[in-house]
Image 1 (cartoon, rainbow, N blue to C red):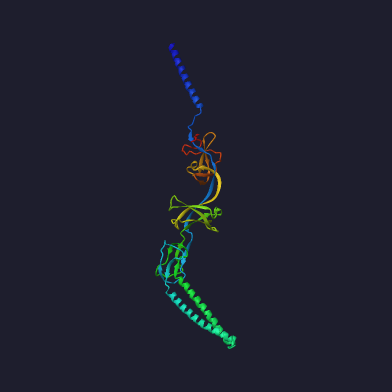
Image 2 (cartoon, rainbow, N blue to C red):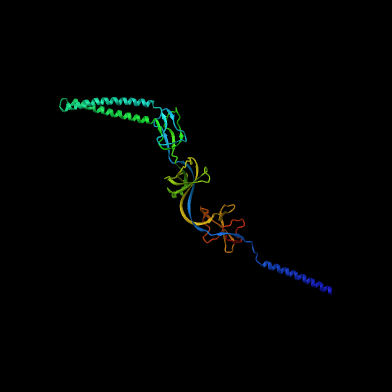
Length: 363
């Protein structure tokens, strides 16, 4: 009998233990699971001033370039005084041509003028003498008119001979090729012994300033204005920025590309050379916009869409797709996707994702 009671007690105890464990499990299932919270910093979008910028590629060109063409083709080049890269001033003699023929022509013209003047003086004396006789009615009218005609003809011959001589002297001056502007010799197409032609003998570019020339799309073309600020970056000078301003806007667009040419002017600083490639930025218009620090915005893997995470009322992270605008001083403009009341998660972490519990901390 005692054995039966002992066995019964053991069964009752075992069943009670099973029931207690089942009750404990039920209680655990009823309690909410406390998830691990990611510590993050947050920031709200703020209103900032942004300057809309136009980016385009450009090539540096001389501010002004002059083609020096010989005015007397067919002449032999005797001497050339400059080489490519030389800096010259306006009026500098670049080359000399053979003057033997023109010098001979000048001598002949001078002799002709001398004879014309001698003849003129003789006829003038006769004219003055015969004028007095004609007034005294010593000679006939016909005789006087003959002398008067010779006098006028001789006077005209002197003027013509003088003009011919002056013209030849001008032609002789063309036998010395001069620089029309100050600048640097960018091309030399003459050597001693060459015969001059109508093609440019030299090219001279002003070297104090250069212009960056590029094309901008039709949709932003009307917003470009002369005088707007610009900046340039060149591969030849990494990390350096050059300040400029818009100097010229083409009055027409290219019908094939729907683009218009724009020129920005800047100091050459004696280091910027024509032909260099320049990434050019023109500052268009200033406006207000919502802004976030750059580090608050990321990209969706696979799509490249701009995203950020916003704190919800339940202290969880909510994914937002945003449209970005201009960038300035570490801030990025938010065109769409956020409001000024949103609290954006600043902390960048792989643990921050849609629905993750967060805890906001402040530094």
